[in-house]
Length: 480
Image (tube, rainbow, N blue to C red; front, side, top):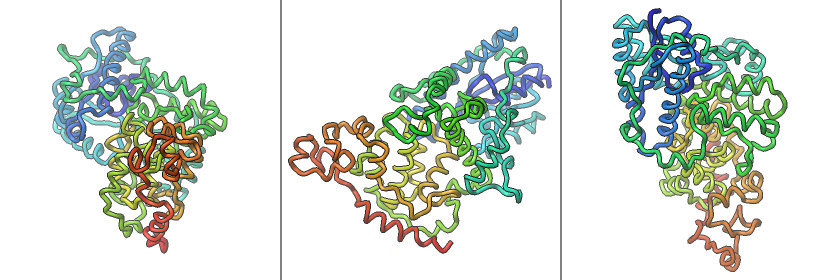
């Protein structure tokens, strides 16, 4: 090829990048572009969305890294072309202006992205420009892991076994982008990166996340986790303990490479690394499910659950959203989400179970709330997690297994350290009441400076009664 354009999306790094590697190998000149897509940005409900700040920082860092990469290959003036508009307009327009033969991108599996890419490919074809995409954000995709009968898996454990059996060094080998850096072309003169203000966004609450940003941040977190991975299996379920990797947002936006992470865990071995690798397999599993069953975005994977009648309970839904349920572990988790854009994975299961099985509210309402607030929001994983908790999914928790928020709290935050961090109104509540503050008597409430119903709410539902209602509600599916 004479020239190619690499379109960066959820892969904001300059190394081990499938589309960039392909373009640099096969084109004499390679341009790079990122689009702040108005079709996505204009739909966001808040102008202080942390994710936009995270992306903006990563884009600025990527621009600098591409410039340095070009200099290492003997060129200067390269970098990232940045546009703010509708991607379906901006990509064909830029490809025509640059006179490229092909646009290269890494594959996205979400239905809206598939539709967008198909439309871009059609518009490019009118001008005789090709569009090609590559596997980059997962280890195995689409039809690569199938049952012996050639159908997609719908249960995780056999999928994981087949995934692990298939894995070898070739699937975690990085793409040697640096080897071909001399093909990076100078970007047009006058190109710059619009500020967050110019995009119509602020980033004041990004600092509350306390998350290292960009490729540099991803590498910092991976190095830190590498020293802790042996205890991952034992520590991962306790939100007050530094037990997880905190790499989920970096995986979502591609500031780390999935091949690097999976390869590290695979080579490291041991129970901690094997458990963490299993979490990466879950990620591939949910992307495979979304690809083969795009209807799960709006509907249960199991058709029988279409018969379930969820409650219309706006007051209860508001209490859940606003951390006013009266169950400390649930409220502390929701505070963590709203204050930082992050929620510990164990807590995601607890609050999802509480919304669907204690409050009887449709899982789709919880999924949408997470979509608005999670820094690492990923449609495939989030949808899969919510359907698991609601028992509607492909590999779901059986409907009769219902998390008890009190026993979950006692088990995974036994001293109430996490609860007190996000619920300071419970700071002086004795340990024996920290999971059930409503059991304190008037004297104990006064001593704890926490009056139930005033300083902290009473429980909005009784778990035992809610469990009975849930068994009846979801029991309509048991014949299936």
